[in-house]
Length: 195
Image (cartoon, rainbow, N blue to C red; front, top):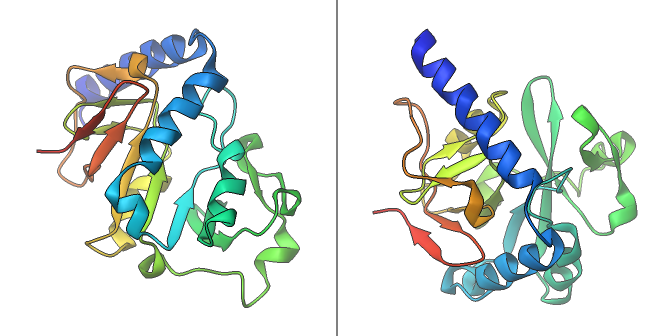
């Protein structure tokens, strides 16, 4: 990556993080975003869904987990291990504890249970965080590359949904050839589908 591109990404991260931190009423707006997501036809067809567990100023996801379980869907959450994302089938919120960078992750002992691990190919739909997005589905992450590496391991028909506050949208996100485009980005105002 060129120094110019790296600098541009850092400027966008800083601006988007500032906007996100100033989001009015993030709990209510997060509900609007996930209710819009749950109205998508792809959600209706999905049986195994992956959600990030929100931290700091991200779109809140945890409140929605009870709804996922009540609909009989398998809820999968990620955790960081040796620079990669592992996948865990979550059954209760108390199975989580602070892990990498303070993010709630499955407790280490539970990850060892044979029936709780999930393979990337099992996922029907993934809800993906980001610092910033554009309306074409391009995503700017935190710069660690966890999701970039992970998304190369899923099925080609797995639905990739970025979620963010409308204030995190930019006219254009710089991308590299290996970057994976979201199928759609969901905000409190609209669903922006990649062209």
